[in-house]
Every structure is written in structure tokens, then in C-alpha cells.
Amino acid sequence: MRSAWHRPVLRALAPRTLRGRLSLVALTTAALLITALTVVFNTAVERHLRQQADDELRARATAVAATVDTSGPQVRVLETANDQLLDTNVWIYAGKRLLERPPATSASNPLTRTTDRLAARGAPGCATVRAEGQRSVRLCARPVSGGDATATVVTALDLAPYQSSADTLLWGSLILDAVMLVCAYVLTRLAVGRALRPVRTMTDQATQWSAVASDERFSTGGGPAELARLGTSLDALLDRIRGVLRHERQLTGELSHEMRTPLTRIIAELDWWRSRPRSAAETRATHEVIDEAAQSMRTICDTLLRDARDTATDTSTAPGTADVVPVLRRMAQRLDTPGRVKAVVAAEGGHHEAGVAPAFLERVVSPLLANAVRYARSTATVSVRHTPGAVVIDITDDGPGVPEAFVGELFQPGRRADPGDGHHGAGLGLPLARRLARSAGGEVTYDAGHAPGARFTVTLPVG
Picture 1: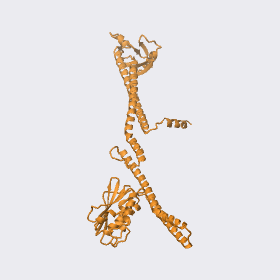
Picture 2: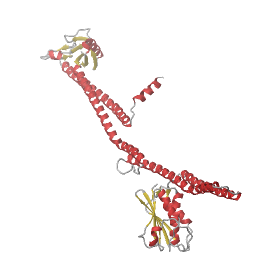
Picture 3: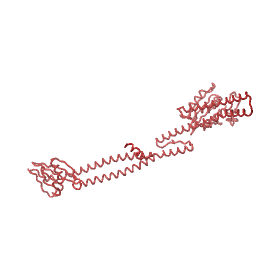
Picture 4: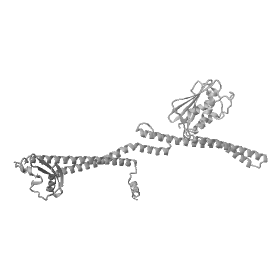
């Protein structure tokens, strides 16, 4: 019951922010350490002051013992010029018999009773007594021997000055402890706040970037290593999310584009069939066209959705991303190249990841690579490099190049530079590659200044 009652109270009192919690932990740790040091310090001071009092008492007892004569059968106290000073707070015993005591004390006084016990021991010893007015008095006994008789000298010292010094040091240390704790708390809050300032900045940046779909990154270099690693992790998460969004947009765009043609055929056939009465043969023909278009739509949906599922289940890369170099090398190996032509894939730097699915990358590069191999004399080269925010793929061949007069029509559907060159094709590969690249936020361009041969450049967003 008790612990269950305390839990909600502790949760309510606990700081809500990380800054407050770290400051509280630092304050608690400092308080424990300072408390331990204060206890040790004041204990050592108290022992030192007591040792000083005992040393003073023993010195006085030694001085008084010089006036006690034990050489004869009886103990005699010799009179000296300063005996009044020496007799202050001094008791002298012959065995257990009290010979002298301070004038202000009586036999029933607590001090006298304590000195009786110390003298009865017959050995050196000290004791602390609470006298009138609740003041503490320190008593020390010193045996005196040297003849047939034995004597004991007991001296007393008021501990009020020593206790006052100890109390002053205690209060001073407590005030110093309080000041140190306040300073430690304030400095910890300032230090933690300064350390967490980049985190707040990153939070504000994330809020701003999510509102405007920015391509900014957290890991800009500099700063503590922990924040740099956090920024790198957040950048990887942002890249993965952006890759997923790109993949969804590409899938939606491809579905919309690919299914528009069969849907148009179905609508046109239905409009034609309903325009006037049709014969049974015309109706069957209309049904066949609609069935063919529906099958085409089904095939398109199955293909695109299967590609989306394969991409989503591929854990080697994020959804909507592709490791460019392995994909290009697989494409080069599958090419049906003439015996005289060689396809080479080269990469600058290390890992190159594009923000498109592997199948999408193949559909963009495939017509460009096929043309390069088709028109190359000996070598078709595919090189990969990085630019800020993009992956660049250059497809180069050492063939005759593109005629200058045809460069303006290069990406127009259905246009070919030389329809009679002996190669089959409808002039749709380059326009399709450019359309797909642009749908993913990239581009396909032709470098008219490259010679000899032709060079096409594919630019795609990084993954």
C-alpha cells in the first residue's frame, strides 16, 4: 500500500524534461558527495579539538604534579608562587582520598564525583561531564609516583570555546555546502541546456522540413560525435522514408499511365457498341476487345504490384532504392552483344544507391544500353558517379554518334535517325527512358559535344 501510494507522487514530482532530470541526478550526486565530505570533515575537526583540549589538560596536570611530593610516607602539596593559577580546576588525591579541590566545587558536585572515579582507577584517563548550565567539561587524570606514597592529579577544562569553534565550522561548512549545491545545479542546467541545444535545433529542423518536404540533412559535420551519429541515423531514416514515398509515387504514376490505354479501349468499344444496334458478330468482337483490354490491365496490375511487393520485402536496400552497380553489371551480362563489342561497367568511389527500385532502374537504362551496344564499334561503357543529391550514370559508346540534324528530335516518340539501318525499333526507347526518369525526379540527357561516339547521361535521386 505504501509503495503504491508513493509511486504516483514520485512520478508527479519527477521533472518532465531531460534537462531537469539530468540536473536532478547531478544535484543528488553532488549532495551525497558533499554530505559525506562534510561529515568526515567535521568529525575530524571535532577529534582534533578534543585532542588539543586533552593535550592542554595533560600539560596542566604535569605542571601541578611537580608541586606534589610523594617521596615520604605521606603525600604533601608544596606551595609555590603561582599556586593559585595552578589550583584552578585541579583536584589532588592521595590514593583515593581527596586532598585539594577547587573552592567553587563541593563533594557532591558532578565534577567531583567524576574525579573520584578517575582517581580510583590509579591510571591515566579522561572523561567528559555535563556540568551546571549544560556546559561540557573535560577531565583528565595523571598519577604521580616516586616514593612510598601515590597521588593522582585531575585537571578540568571547559569545552565551550572548543564547541563554539566546532559549531562555527559546522555552520560554515553547511552554508558552503548549500552554496556549492546551488552553483552545481545552476551550472549543470546551463551545461545540459547547452549540450541539448543542437537536439532542439534538430527537432525544429525536422518540424520545418516535414512541412516543406525539404531535402536538407542533419549530418552536416562538426559537433559532438554522439550528435553526429544521431544525425546520420536520422538522415538514413529520412532517406528511407523519402525512398518509400518516391516508390509509391512511381507506382501510382506507372499504374495511371499503363492502364490509361486499355481503359480508353474499353470505353471506346462500349461507346461504339451503344451508338447503334449491333449484330451478334460485332457484339462478340466488342467482347473480345474488352476482354483483351481487361486481361492487359490485369497483367499490368500483377506485374507492377509484384514488383512493389518484391521491393518491399528486399531487406538489402530500402523500399524504392537500388544498389546501382550490381544492377548495371547484371544488365551487362544479360546483353546479347555482338562478338566485336564489349560492355564495361565502371564506378567512381564506393557504394552508389539510387532512389528508384531495381526494376525501374533497368527500365530506364535498358534502352540506352541497348543502343550503345548496337551502335558501338568495340566498347560500350557504363560509368557511375555521385553528385550532390544525385547518382549519375553515363552510357558511352565509340560508334558513329547521333547525326547533328537529328539531335532535336532524339527524344520524340516514333522518330528514328535512320529507319533503314537494319535494326528493329519503333523509336520509343529513348522517350520512355526520359519519361520514366522524370517521373522519379531525374533526367535523361544527350551530350552533343561528346566525340567520338555518343554519350547519354541518366540522373536519378540518391537513395
